[in-house]
Each structure stands twice: as C-alpha cells, then as structure tokens.
Length: 540
Image (cartoon, rainbow, N blue to C red; front, side, top):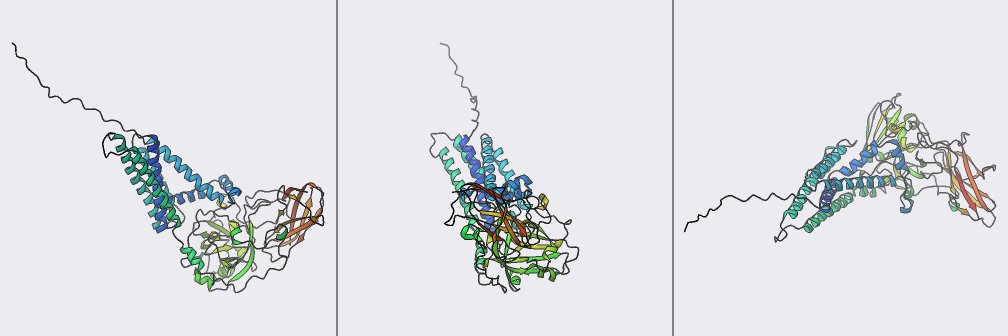
C-alpha cells in the first residue's frame, strides 16, 4: 500500500486588517465640547487667582468690543430686554457674551464631528482657539506678564482633556464587547460630562473669586466726607408725585453705559493716578492723596450721547470728589495742550477738551463718592471723572488710572476713532415722562390731567419749557421746579383740561442763553440726538 506523505503548512494565515475606529457623532461632539469647556473654566479660575480680567474668553470679548464696526456697536448699545429687567448698557454685554459662547459651542460641535476618524481636527481647533485667546490677552491695552497664565492654562488643559477623552473613546470603540473590564461608551460619555462639569465649576469659582475691592470700598464709608456738602434740596425739587423722576437718582437706578464686560476689580489701596504729558511737573497720586485734599460735593446731571430723543440715558447724583481743575493747575498745563486724554484700567480712553476743564466754573471732579457713599463698582470705583456739560464719552472715564495732557492730533480716544465728535457739549433737550406712550390718563377731580417731564442744558441751565398739544395747538408754558444749579436738570409740569379721546403732546426747552431746543431731528452720532419729543396718548 503506497505511503502517503502529510505535508504540514508552516505559512502564517493572512492578518486581519485593523478595524478603522469611527467615533459616534454623540461621543465625538461631546469630547470636543467638554475639552473646550474645561479649558475655558480652568482659565477663568486661573485668572481669578492670578490676574483678574485675563481670562481668554473675556479677552476675546473685549477685542470684539474694541474692533467692532460702528453699525454693530450702535446696534449693541440700543439693546435692552425689559421683560428680563435688563436695560441699555447691560443688555449689550450680555448679548455679546452669549453670542461668543454660542459661536464657540457651534465650533466645538463641528470640530468634534470632524474628529470621528482622527484626532487632528479636534486638536487643531483647540489649539487655534487657545492661540486666539492668547493673542487677545497679549494685545490687550492692559497687558501684563501675569496675564499669560490664564490663556496658557486654557491651551494646555484643553489639549490634555481632549487627548485623554479621545483615547478613552477610541478604546471603547475597539474593545471587544464581551471582555470584562473593557471601556464602554457609557463610561466615555460619563467621563466627558464629568470633565465639562469640572470646567463649569471652575468658571463659577473663578468668577466669584475676589471681593478685595468690595471690602476696600466698604471700609471707606466713613472717610468720604465732603468739606463742602451739596446744598439741601429745596421743597418741590421734582414732580415725582405726578410722574417725573426724583431729582436725585438712586445709585441702583443710575444709567450705565460703558465697554467693560466685567467690572474691574481695583482696591483703593492699589489705585494710583499719573498726570503727565504736556505739563510742567508730573503728578502721581494715591487714593489717600485724594482724600487728603478738600472734598467737594455737588449735584451733577450726566447724559450719554447715545440717548435718543425722549430716551432714559440721563441721571442725576450728588458726586463727591477733588477739583480736577485744581489738580491740572498744580501740574501746570502747557498752553498747547488741547485735550485731557484719560485712560481707564480696562484700557478705554476719552479725550476731554482741556479748556472746558480749566474754566473756573467747570465743576469737573475726580469723583470718589456718589450720593453719600463711595462710588459703586459699576460706576467707577475707586475713582472716575465727572465733567458737567459734556457727554460722557468725552468726559466721564470710569476706573480712572491715567491722565495725559496732549493734543487731539497726537492721540485719538476710543469713540472718536469710531466717528464720534472730539468736542461734545450737551445739547439743550427735554423729555416727556408723563404720559407714557399710548397711556390713558384719567382726569382728576378738577377735570385736568397732569403732564410732566424733565429738561436739561448742563452748564447753561433751563429758563423755560413749553408744551404743545395736538400738533396744531399753541405752545403753553409749563411750570418749572427750582434751578438747583446750572449743572443739573429741571422738572416741568403742566395741568390741563383735555376732552376724552386721543391726543399728541410735544415739548421744547429754552436754556439760559435764550437758545431753544431745535425741532430738526438728528441721530445720536456724532454729537448727540436732537429734535422735539412727541408722544401719542389718550384721555379717558
């Protein structure tokens, strides 16, 4: 019988090619979102610990504010959300921060989806965002070396979190489903959520750090005592009982317009001011230096140039501070110095005409107090400028830190760079406070309805206010409250009998120079709105 030979093959079977790892859409997006969230959160915490205001998210938002075109800036300033109790000056900041957050979230989701097969897109987007935050911090007007800590923390934390979560997700996709101890997709999702929660917690903790400025402010209540208090208000200083504002605006109700996305955290102990440039002698002042000088208190009405006709961006307070004119005279201003270029601690700038501040009756202050207490943080604590008679964008620098005497050609401030005027004296204006638009008024026992409002022409004063009803009616003189001083508003009131039905009211003011508020409408830009306010209302 023939022998059969058995041949045993020594060849290795072909290897099974490795399975390509593709993350699910949910996992990939969540890994990227969680990584960016923890990066932003830890950078916020680092900023709170090391250099408040240096968080890259805030730095990017500040850069948007500085570089935004005029149209976008004006749109933002007009925003308000009455249903949420958020008015102008705050709504724009909230809208900007929410918009930037939404854009980052969208970018994170798209980057995550692009990273399903490989990690490079996700890592690249985190790196690009990190570099953008770093650049925003470096090119900030108030950059300091310690400000680098927060954006570097963001970059490192974001990449580290992404690499860890992505590796975990890849293991979950490649692990055999029956292998005990393997990484499950559920574990990856829980890990990503936990990382995101850490980021949110860190952001909250970082935002709540501080309080040194609040403690510093609280310690100053007993020290803000003017040598010359403002005169007591006479009876009848307002017509609040029939709808005008109170003569003095409570600090919590005082309008706020500025570019600060986060209120600067400055203590009185750390505050310092440099007065330099075209002066005979440079001055350097601490907060104690200011309080050692005579403190003056005076009622001053401030108005924002963005105030539309019949708008509410106007308020009055008793401001306490040091005469700015006296400080400039002490420094010795050169004759060619046209503007007082002021800088806020957040980098915002304003250019105030020097000749206005140097007038003997200018009333310009470096203010440290407001309505009997230290300046509130949102209104410039520790020190701000107040120059009566000029719109705030050329005169009312908050969180003041530097004053340079210079020329308009040499330096251009924040708003003039965007097309606003260099000189902006406040126009003669008036407003209708009662009735409100489309309100129905009920006559009193005497058959009349009370109409009321305000008028202002800071540094000139108001001589009269006239009211016209139903467009073709005659101009009627309104009753005025006493003129407290030339730097404040006056209230007007007219009691009139009107038949039931629809009516239309207009008003106009005449200042102490004899100039009457113009009827020609003008927008706020470049130097303040103009026109007669008018309101449609009804009588029951």
